[in-house]
Image (tube, rainbow, N blue to C red; front, side):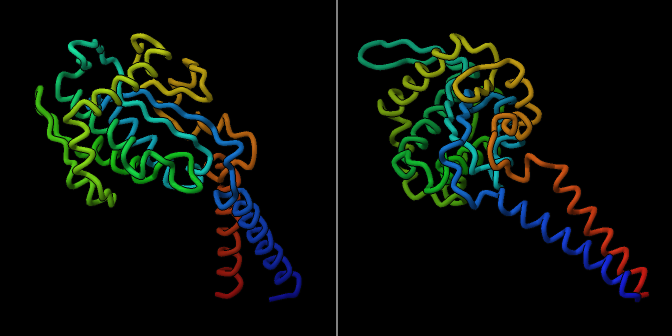
Length: 256
């Protein structure tokens, strides 16, 4: 192999290293607290579209560097209607009484898992979000009935206060928490025009909401203005893969 060819391969290797270093510099290892995007999700525990969005768009996107760029607020209320009667709230949920139960379980989980505090370094509680994603994914609904796998989801996500969450959901605390989520929802729209509704930085935009349903990453990346993570830069990732492929091809050619 000639010196010029060695230099060529070495130069390509440097290109890959530089690109990978640049990608690392823009990864979630940095502190992005000052420029996180506020994301509010208004949804329902038994809504098919909500479940699809949560399990196929929102939760998967939070498993990488993108999770460092989000201040996430989950609002499991949707198109529920509420009325205050005899010292307590009564709810009429979009998908029936079982959905009210599911909404209350999630409302209590958001309040009680780690006292509702975000995981250190993140704009949301990772345990609570994982627990809720599990419920959205594994809840079985047949007709007007539904079975919420709270025990299994608690074990999978290391939730250590499930008894408190279930007691909360069955009593007035759960109703009060859900009523508070109803107030938040009604401030956006009363009633919601669609479920789920996704709001970025406190301002509802129909185009953003529609895009988020099918490509949450793309919709979120529009609002990240500094140190964009690799998930927002498919071209850079592609160039790294292409450079790696070129190097492998060159070595195969000259050493075989």
